[in-house]
Each structure stands twice: as structure tokens, then as C-alpha cells.
Amino acid sequence: MSMTHARFTIPLSLLGCLCAMPAAADAFSFSTGKPDGRIGTLSRPASAGGIQTETADDFILGHATSITKATFYGLIPTGSSVSQVEIEFYHVFPGDSNTVRTPNVPTRKNSPGDVEIGSATRDSAAGNLTFGSSLVSSSFNVLNTVVNGINPFPDQFTGGEGLATGEEVLINVDFTTPVDLPADHYFFRPEALLSSGNFLFLSAAGPSLFTGDLQSWTRNDNLAPDWLRIGTDITQQGPFDAAFSLTGTVIPEPSTWAMMLLGFAGLGFAAYRHARKARPASA
Image (tube, rainbow, N blue to C red; front, side, top):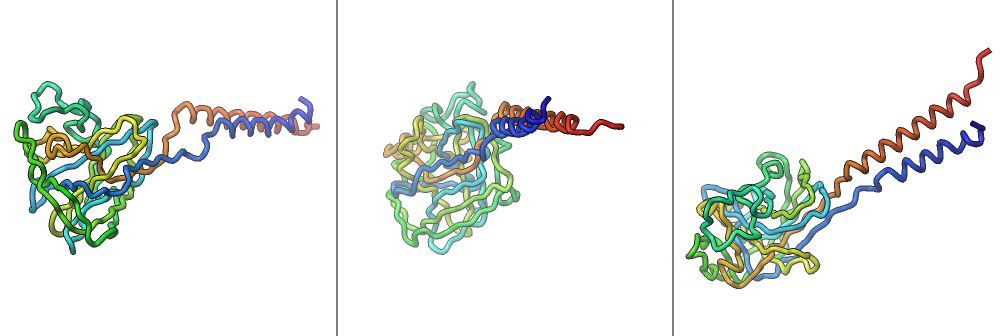
């Protein structure tokens, strides 16, 4: 090999390596927007104040993604504060569900599954998430609420429990252990425990370009493992979306990493050959 050829071997190999390397990880971002004041629905862990009650809304991942942050809006009583946050993720039914049993609700189509994705649960009490809450409005109204009126079929329709006023808060969550999920359709379920009173997850107008959007669902421990559609089953005013956002990074495909490793291997081999050619002959 001529020295001119050798001089170009390393730069060309480096170029091939850089082309094989992924660019800075693609960012993932999803948001349903800000609260619209239509409804607030209970979402709290089990406590001395009452049984666990969950509200969940959906999102879609087009690629495997590492979720690192979340936000969600709530209505809390004036003077109360958030003491604990737990986040769960669910597959869309029939994932993680018993499809043999007869449900006690009008339908389970497009609901969250029976049980959460265990590896994706994050809880401030367990130390795998941190959170902070900020006051958005000291006086915020919702036109309707769902707190206790979560009943099995045929008594699922209650119309809701009416107007509520309180403080609008935004809860910012950092997952100290990121939530890694493959491409799929999921439900996001946050719960907040307060120093006093109930946390109501606020509704939003929803993402305008979200093809395949599903509505918010709710259940309590008396109804579980079934879920009810908040707007279609309980209030007949919906469907509703919930006000939340998620951010993270797309996880590179295995083939991308393989190309990167091959690129580095080629660079190393080219450097090795160049070094041998450049070594002076021994006397």
C-alpha cells in the first residue's frame, strides 16, 4: 500500500464509523395540553382517607423509548399539599388481562389492562422518582367531578358529582430510574396523596394530531380489575382526555449499535495496518 493510500485509510474509515453511529438520541415528547375545566377525577393511592382510585389516559410510542420525565395537572383543596406520587403504565386491553371472565362494566374495549406493567411502576415512596408541585391557579373551577360514583354495570351512569373549586397544581416528575418501553399503545396512570383531601386529575382538550386517541378511564378497588369510561359510561358528557405530558429519548435499534461497532472495528483495523506499514524495517 502506498503512503498516500495509507494516509486516506484512517479518515475514510472514520467517516464510515461516524456514518454508522447514531446521531444524538432522538427526543420523545407527548402532551395532551393544559386543563380545560370540564372535569376532575379522583386519582389517589389507598390511604386512611379512602380506597385506591385510579384515572388513566393513553399515549402511543412509535419506537422503543426511555421515558425520563412526566407532568400532570390536578385540582387540590386550598391549603393542601402533595406528599406522595406514584406512576403506573398499562397495556391496552386485552394485554395483561383475564379475557375469560365476564366484566362488570359495559365494555373493556380500548381500556387499560387488568394489571399494570410491573417493571414500569415508579413511586416517590420507593425512591425511583422525584417530584415537585407548583401552583398554577389559586382558584380553578371544574364543571364536574368523579370521586365516589364508580359503580359496576348496570349502575355505572351517575352523571358525575358536580362542580368543584380549588387550587390548580402542576406536578413535575423525574424518573430516577427511567421507564423503558417498546413501541406500543399504553395508558399513563398517576396518583397523588395529599396532606388533606383528594387529588383530582384534570381533563384536557387532548392532542389535536394524536391518531388513535383513546379516552380517559377510571376505577377504584371495588371495581377492579374492570375500568369505566369517564365520559361515556359515568357522565355521558365525554369522551375526556387527561392533562399530562411525557418526555424522554428514543432507544436506538440493535442494528444501529451493530453498525456502530462494525465502524469502530474497521477504524481499529485500518489504524493497525497503517502502523505496520509505517514501522521501519529492522536492521
